[in-house]
Image 1 (cartoon, rainbow, N blue to C red):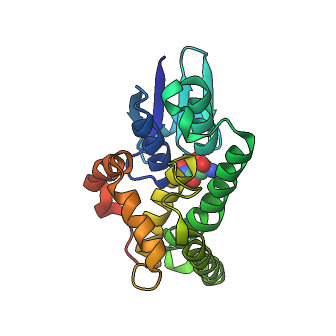
Image 2 (image 1 turned 180 degrees about the vertical axis):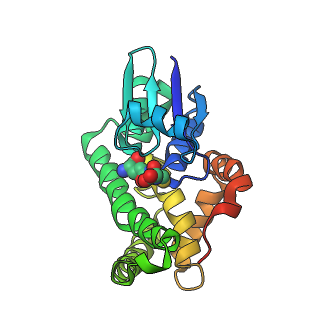
Length: 216
Ligand SMILES: N[C@@H](CCC(=O)N[C@@H](CS)C(=O)NCC(=O)O)C(=O)O
């Protein structure tokens, strides 16, 4: 099995896939992409014109797989050790996909909206967009707080793709809109995620770049 992952260690969606790769012990070749470097950016665009990472190359099948969720689903189908990230039972799999969508769309993307605004020049800020992202994030935190009352992981007792999605979304979400003082069950879940060796490793690899995260 020859996988190459185009990614950057600081990128939240890349951390989602790294967590899945480390969780399953899937061997892969990491190819860090510096988007500021014209040649590296061009190489990414050639594979996936949308220009976002992560992108997985499955060399054996000559397949380019973009989108974090699809990459993890691909791994779960191809690599037995990754199978538990997406249960074979259709009902359980649906629950995992539902939580994965929730974390991507209503936590991760809202966090990205806030971070993206910090990177915009002063004359191009979008306060309305940021306000709406903050409101949605607050709603999501409340939903997770209720939902995590009796569960260890996002869909129950098993660590799945949904937890890979939750981990980086909550890590950066907590930076832009802290929840630890207000949402104890969410904070406890986040604590478990940070201690999970797979995510812990992704976080450690991001540390050297954390200084580039915009704090305001
Ligand atoms: N829906 C995509 C989102 C990927 C994404 O937003 N990636 C960010 C990094 S976390 C990116 O490539 N940003 C660079 C850009 O937009 O130019 C996924 O799940 O993989």
